Image (tube, rainbow, N blue to C red; front, side, top):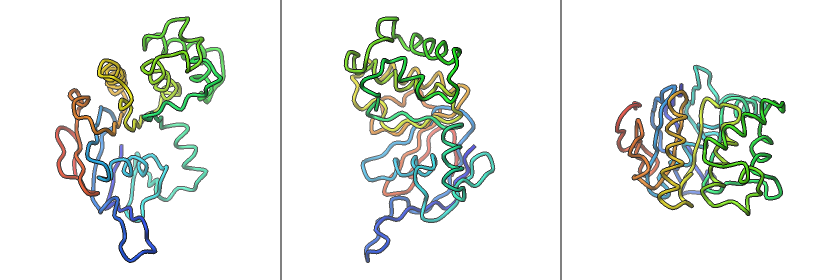
Length: 225
């Protein structure tokens, strides 16, 4: 699905000492599976995710998605790609505070039809939220319920790729593993990329990519460099 060729990201280009967030490497990622990307702060893992998702453009190198070079797309084309193919989950849930859990999910849908509401309810109930929780605003939900609502929102359009940046960092272990179970199930038919500091949540990952100083140090499981 993704072919990354000699990708480089340099910050502070105008300064004498440039910062290499990504130092130039090749990487191939599969069409589906749960892929963990782990490393310390500053290792480049989040920058890699932002480049793959077109939220940032690398300084140099190529990223191909299903054979198409997405690093050459126009801004409008990248927006369409993100809307139709990608989903995002972050450490903070970014739910709209005045909307119910259900409305927070359906607001992200590209098609606003009755079947979308039914699908949103099905997702939320599948993630353990009952009828009462579905109608509540985020402030009335637990941290785990808020994050599961955010995941349902990310899945409402059935994205082919789900990007999750530290999705369990704000959760206790019980809720963290519950979230990872949801992501693992979704990864059976889609690609799920999880950026994390916590190695324990990646115990069931199909592949774990370890990064250090803007480069890939090891890959365990599937994937290749």
